[in-house]
Length: 245
Image 1 (cartoon, rainbow, N blue to C red):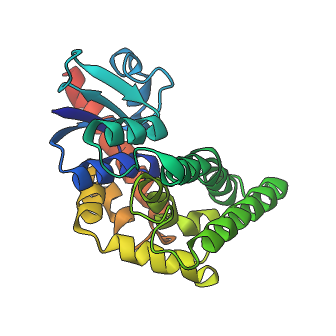
Image 2: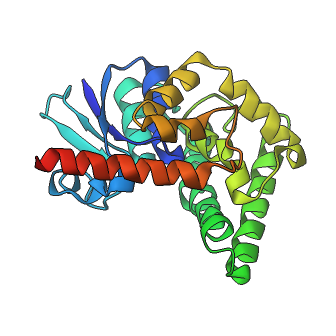
């Protein structure tokens, strides 16, 4: 059994989707990053960088093994199962290249674009810089997918790495109509039952109010989103008061 420490984010979906595709049994462990659970000592023992996702694999000949960092988890699971990562040769190189292209580029730059576009709009230099970089990276991926069904030719960890971030493309100021190859790939992957299960499993961890943010085929700006965040904070405060009684 694998424990998956998770919250519904694009990095977390990489792992929940892969676990579903591999048909590996796992238990979800809720890490509420909006309530700073990621800084608790018990979680830091598993993920010293205080980030999700992280896993603990109890089914090993060496005893429980913890793994943090999403890219490392994808490679670990691929090597554990022998699935979704070629064992050698150019195909393996391509899968690793594009997985870590996402880890080092698409994820961080789109995350920065989201931060400046949605939380620091007054910093126009930041908005412009990271939106342009997100656009550049989308262009790279769109070109890569031309004539290919999957990012590294065969379905695997590179696709798991990228899909969740594309689900949030509007947060980074992108429009899939501008990237027809990405659009085709994204919707084809979204149809897979394991992808749907992997996303739904983590969304179920969020509060009822927060789950409304994950409706639809991809994230779209919602006028009520600040209100949803406020309601979620009220839920946390109520729970904290109840725990003290």
